[in-house]
Length: 301
Image (cartoon, rainbow, N blue to C red):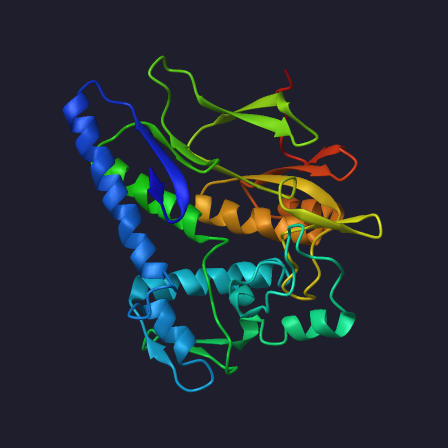
């Protein structure tokens, strides 16, 4: 089903089909609720209100939205700004299709991120207010929203007594429990250089896995491949990596880190992941070379 502009598939393990369908319906309703919470398209909603009042005044929001923004700021700090929800402030000067005949100038690229920066998101925990300090600044949850919705749907299903299941948000997977035969859920890892071939099957036990990749949306200038994932600190697209897969306890965290590592590059990205407990990654660079964080074992096939 289409939710949040993505295809969601929800699987639950249950010996009662009617109960299973009711639980899936409840999960869908929860995902739709999250979509309304974080949407910036509907001008009547709180995220739009925050953006509309950038540079003018603080906006009081629901505690849930406040805490999501608070966590997003923490992840931005953790990744040295490689992940940043204020990326929505970026001028859209890159077009990753055939319509782009030449690279933007250095000046245009620098100006495109002039309003970006999580440090300019001012939070007041006492009053649950959010203030974007720069006029024209915006926040958006495109790099974290699907993961958060999957986490909330999983939590809801667990609270309703669903012992096992898996939520697939356009390839971003969030699993708990085991398959009906008692074996762990498993996720296939593909090399984008050969998309028809799976090189590893990884168990997914009460964890989420998210992949960011540039094998479909990119442009080439002067022999350099520029991915559609842009560094919010510089305005330049990432060039070094083809794919980043992150395993983490929460899909929200995995979602954000996959984007951040893609921007940071192989060495800095793996170094950062190695410092975070219970988080692992698999990276494929532009030469097709596979690298991993230190605590992961590839079950190659």
